[in-house]
Length: 149
Image (tube, rainbow, N blue to C red):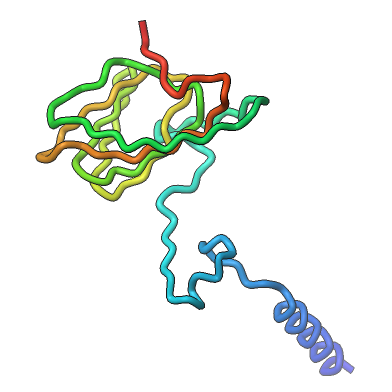
């Protein structure tokens, strides 16, 4: 009786496991079957500062993708982002600083989830000009960046 119960449970678990789709970091694109490699660069509900991201505003979404080049040694003016955004450092080295002097450095290949509604600055501190690709998940009613007073 015990063997029959164990065999029945094992058969059930196996059949459920086989019938369920297998998921990985490829987001359902079936890339591994095509020889495509997909690597998650950043996935979080937190900003680089450790704070939780805010809820999305309720208005028409607007996605913006920018390629930004900052010459070596240039520091951006203090600013904030009222919308959620993320970036990938394509070249160079980026130092981000909050007004309270909390800092983080991101190198070529690093991805980051930017702070929202927090005044901060960024500086190109590497040997090469900084190039970042930034993805803004904003709305038609909000600017992506606001300069601080």
